[in-house]
Length: 190
Image (cartoon, rainbow, N blue to C red; front, side):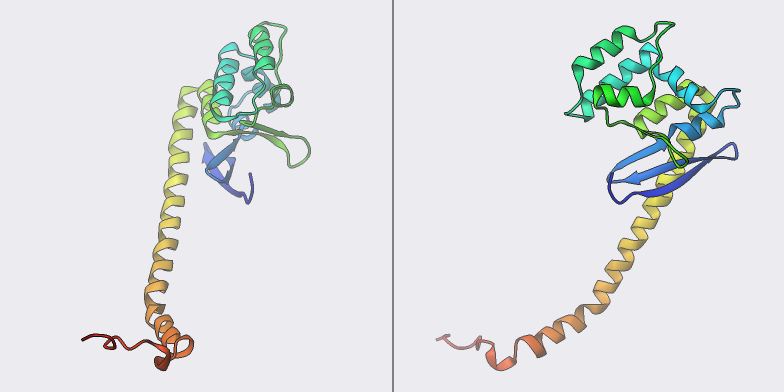
């Protein structure tokens, strides 16, 4: 993800970070897990979700569709272990073992776990139905605002181009192509 922009979703007065870049929106699973009033750390909530067999199957399918470098052999081993009581799958382990690109996990003060919007919506569904609906609505609001902003920028650029057209064409005629150098359009007509 190059040249990223950060936006904020607000759900139940809690903020969720969205990283926007190159047609890929990555939503903070860490922030989403904090929105649910559970007495566990967000990373444990994310690990519990990722250890679910249905989640692993979803992640594998998403990676197969979007990631040509996805390690399918390792994903088979993960699928076989998923759902067992003793099995825990962390985002870091998932990314390292399968070369996944749908989830990004960073350690440290400004770290956290981010997932592509498709995967983040699945996580939102797992948290609760009401959270899922609020997430969809807030994300759509963000996209509508982004669309309006981009459309206004385009209209502004179009207006400037229209206003400057006459200035540019006159400058080209007067400076770059002197009238004496232009061919006579009547010459050669019999």
